[in-house]
Length: 282
Image (cartoon, rainbow, N blue to C red; front, top):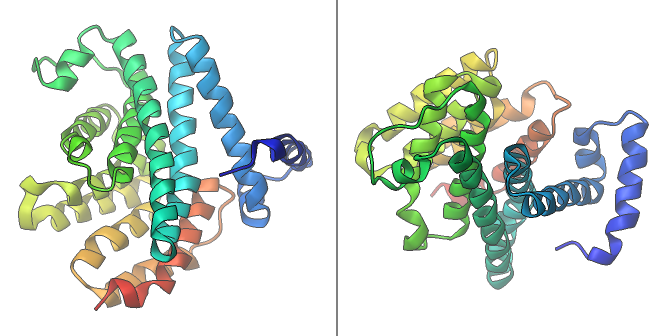
């Protein structure tokens, strides 16, 4: 957890780096402590604005997305590593992420409720009539689904949250129906891990996940690093296919570097997964 008394000096440093032309990816790679502070402050600022003006749909979506990005990119990554070495501390990290994911989901849910009068009834399953979603709803649906997925994942198997997994599918599938190639395959990538979480797919889950991987690659121009890593971590670890796992993880690491924060985060996770190969395969 970042010490609040050190936030302002770090923000100033990040600001100076940004105006000198450095990208968020450069900062994350070379100055991870600055990047974490930068994204934390963006998240906190958006959260405060959403709380102060809950009628602003744009503000609600911004808070949902930034809070979700920060918790996935930093807190969950730290928790995944920490839980292996210090279980109580790792559990606390997951709890920290969980509370923010819940709030982020509530912001996204509120934005959808404001745009679509019967969204809550449809989402809860009380009615079957799908709201009249449009292309502008795709980001809202995606980030709300991602936040809910984060709340489920960070709950560490809490039945109260696990039973809400179908809601993630409702949101992602609604977005896919509108613009499947949105954000260069982000929705397809998200559907890989969702597919592997579905009990109703049984033995066909891996095949469905593979189809989403192919679609993600096509949407991104040939190679979607995030989707490749997700497939390796979920499908190939589950099937204990070590050789295929190593091929895909190394392919991510050998991919030409991009100046995107997500690319850097994916590469760092790939590096970490390689160090855990012997633990993942037995």
